[in-house]
Length: 464
Image (cartoon, one colour):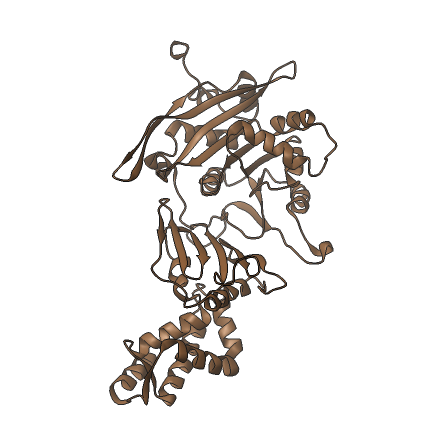
């Protein structure tokens, strides 16, 4: 079928002289008006099927575009007819030059600062400003509107700030005028969770953590210790959490809760496509009618009725923090992420979030609850040189008299910072600071951890 299209356009290139050469923008406006008036439903199908492996709709629209160009004897300088058809389709039913980045590999984020200022952040942490740009503020707005169409969101003057998604692993946040200047057009952040699943060796090779640190985090989760992965945006929280969840035995039931769009993909299949683990993925739903909205809090309440072994809260942002700590203190293992800037500040931030539900409860009471619920915090950070490191793993030990003591189990110590050829050079090393507490050791043994496995994480007396 693609060969027919190529043959047709090649024939046009050879035998059909256009009436006149035209600018691409003029051709786009004309062809878009024609195709939209005749085949709008087909174009919408094309938008909804982007990157889903269904090329029939795409090829059909391209055939209609090619026929119109042929009938009207239209061409553009510097472009073959096939190139013109491809570019017209990309502009009409895809996302302009952004399409190849959105569905590319090793790209984590695309930031539209304005119509003529777009940058891409790669998985390595490198950020590159693109030479490509939209043709105008209106062009940028129109492309972003097509993105939001996939999630049923409308960007207009009554709704100039929108959160949407392109697929289960691509989120988009958008601002347009009057929230940004007219000459900017639109500002957007497109967050892409790479489908490539990292293995333990990848984290170790990149210096994110040591082998022992990775094994300890996995063992704590495996044997029922609720854990929070903390850090700022782009610190690698979701990637690390995703790996931790893959280490859970396949016979354990996992219930995930995410806000607005799905970043985790934990379902495993054997060679014949049969699902071999137990996972329920859920996402929240926002509605202008509050009665129809489903929050993380609502889904947490529902999760308890599914008898999960593990509850995963994609990110604690608000009052769901209180429901999460309640679930963790009633025997469920809860894994979650949170924005914070250190291990100790993570527990204090949990207090702030819990107080959105119970503002009159004393801070110390809530702090006691969240430290009991989440005894382990893992703090991740992206350094100035774009390398990602687990900066600290900390335990909050509850003493017999009720007092809390914070123990740093592992810490990344930076020994040197300097500039070299205009780039940051950061040298540091992960170091073990202390063993997990005796009370947590007892808990792990009670939850089934073999003594010999526990011993691997304890220093010998001669090492202390």
